[in-house]
Length: 75
Image (cartoon, rainbow, N blue to C red; front, top):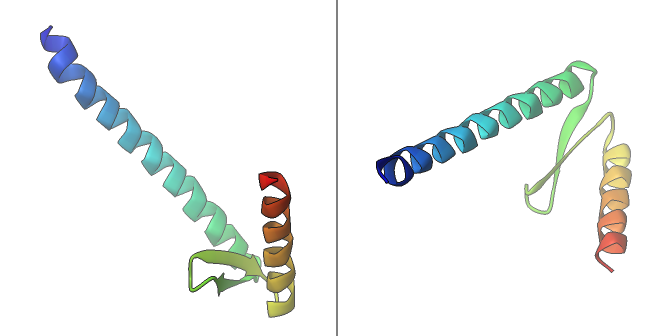
């Protein structure tokens, strides 16, 4: 009873924090790789969407392609 009420919620929180931390580290590493390759960061939808590309035209094309794929998938 004590394990279920005290240990399991703590372990669940620890595991979620641990996996979130690992995911954020991997995401940050990928962002840094893209920036090191000479890409720039472009923001769309008032900063909610970030796109990494060499030029604004490429970023717009990637963003529009992503929107089209999401719209197609939601149908």
